[in-house]
Image (cartoon, rainbow, N blue to C red; front, side, top):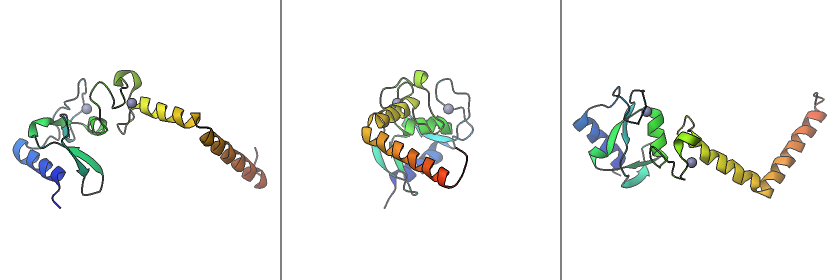
Length: 139
Ligand SMILES: [Zn+2]
Ligand SMILES: [Zn+2]
């Protein structure tokens, strides 16, 4: 199978050289780029050779030098200002792996709002406490 993602990254290197060490193109970022990142619209979705979900465009101009954290950020969708779920990034912040902190908060809230989840979490806590008692550990 021809991997379009691999092909476009090879072509980027051939035509535009390596992006490593160039200034990251994200606004206000002072880090150096770790490679080319997609800053335009993705036109293709698929998997890389490791089976990870990737997105790409076949237009070389849709790429800019990006540091790892900004590459991760855009790989998860959205743009510089907003995450794909509309959280304003400057307000909510971003985890190191590129995940929006607003999205994490929302998914935690949704989980705790689910009575079944809470029941399971409470049962688990009781089990652990019981196990500690039978092991004679201090409470
Ligand atoms: Zn950056
Ligand atoms: Zn978000």
